[in-house]
Each structure stands twice: as structure tokens, then as C-alpha cells.
Length: 357
Image (cartoon, rainbow, N blue to C red; front, top):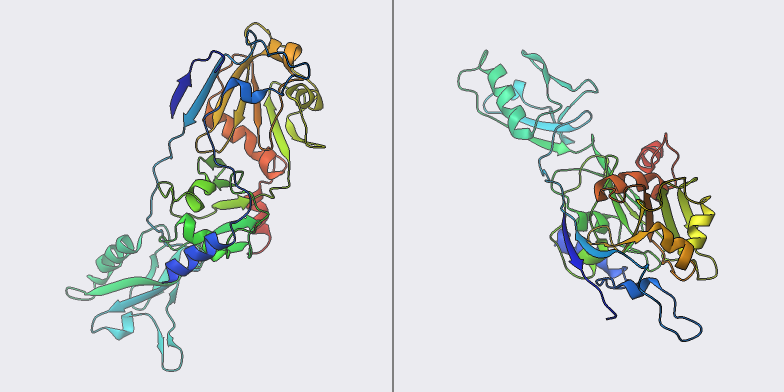
């Protein structure tokens, strides 16, 4: 990741799917901007300026880096293959006069059955790799075998688009579907969905992707390929919460009620800080998208002195760290259960799979 530090003083099918992805994404989605210390504070009632002595130590706009992405598809159980061995129909996938190509199903153990050869493992290989494996087996029975392999139906892997989209659900991974097309498959984001607070889960990690940048501002640099188990979740724009984690008694989500929540109130709602050395401790208030958030680093005594003046916004993340330097990737892992509302044993992607999709 790259940090921009600031010093402070007072101052076709794809086309149709992409159209569907953006057509309903018309709710209020504010553009991000670099943060200033003053952004944290309410306007003083007495008209006096707010002293800066105990405010944020730093304000940084973090440019996160996306992990390396692979776009190759690995064959899996239940996929249906179309195998053609030239001049050897008996070794090719089954064809039916009425139904056309029936195909060869990859069994749950990952193997297929080929006449004469017998069982051949297919799961775990790319199409090209499996074609080479099968060719080696065929050489024992056929001179210079010429064959082709492609996937007739993708059945082994799914990704999920859930939340405030028109048609949430599970969709097949085919090695070619990118994030924009995935949103299109779900028929687009509903007006009440919040693109700026949407998140993308891969495995048990959040990917630093801002859907508002992708759909509304045309930044396709993170239009990633969808992989097995990927989850895109669009929350409601009316869901006004902040998230507090780290060295507090009961880490969790805190609702913003009546349109106002101060930093002091949020800390109180999670039971307060755990005993730490205030002189060494730091609090990070992280605001904005997962892709390019603004990070305010504050002292502990800021809560005591001015915590009631610092107003939070929906989606803010407060990380209380005894030494002040929790890494962004670690914090993103810690916050995932709070975002999904899942308990420690069942994350939202598992729940989606439990839906039987």
C-alpha cells in the first residue's frame, strides 16, 4: 500500500449486462476526497475555533494494492466436459441424436470415466492441462491422438451477489466473468443500495475494491475476475452504523441514532477501552472506501478531551491499537465478522452456500 501523508495547520451480452449493472445504481453515492482534521469535528456552538493541540497526529489517504489475480479456471466436480477425439467417436463424449452433446460429467471424486482408458482425474486442472493429461493416457492406445476438450456446463464453482441488488443469488464461475458482469447478472444495484459501503469478500479476506469507483466513476482497474466462493454484498444506504474493534471490551457495530454519533459515544457503546498505556496507545479512525480510505490517527486522550466533538459517519471504522500500528490488511480481516453480522463459526459466504444455491 502507498500512503499519502499530509501535514496540517489551520487550512452485446456484456454490454447488456453492464448496462443492467449501472442502470439501477442511481442512489446517492458521494464521491470520496482527501480528509482534513477539521472533518472530524462538529461546529462549535459558541463560535470559537477548535484547538488543534490534541487532534489527529496524522491524516493519510491510503492507496491499497490489489493482490495478484488469476483468471484461469480449474475443472471441478459436476462440471460437464465436451471431449472430442478425432476419428475415435467411442472415446469422445456421449452424443444423443435428440439432445445433442450430452457431455462427460466430472464425478464428485474429481474423476471422469473414459472408455478403454478407465478413470482419469480431471478436477484441479485447467482445460489445457487436462487436455495434455488425457492425451498422454490416449497415447497408450491411439497413435498420435488428436483431441479437444472444452467445458460444456460450469457447475462446480459459484460466486454470490447479495444484498440490495435486483436479483441476488449464486452464479457460476466460468473463468471469464468479471466483477462488472457479476453485478449485471444480478440485474444491477437497487437505488437504496450503498455502493460506497459495498464490500467484496474472497476467502476470509476483504478485497480493497470500491464499487462506486467501478460502476459510477468508470475506474475499471479493479474489475477482477470472479472466483469460487467470492461474495459481493451491497448494504442498504439506510443502514447507518460504525464499527469499533481492537482494544475495546465488546468490539462490534454501533448504530447512528437520530443522525448523530460522537467518537466518545461509540467507544462507550462497546464498553470502553481496555486498560492500556494511554501515552503509547493510538486510535485509528478509518473513513471512506475500502480501496482508498482516509486514516486519522489520534491519541487516546483525544477521546477524553474532545471525543464528544468528533462526529462519526456511517461506515466509519474505529481501530483501537495499543501500539498504534495495526496494519490495514490485519484490520480488514478483523472487521469482516462485524460487517457480515456473522458469528465466529459461520461467515456470510457459508450462509449463502447453505441457501442451497
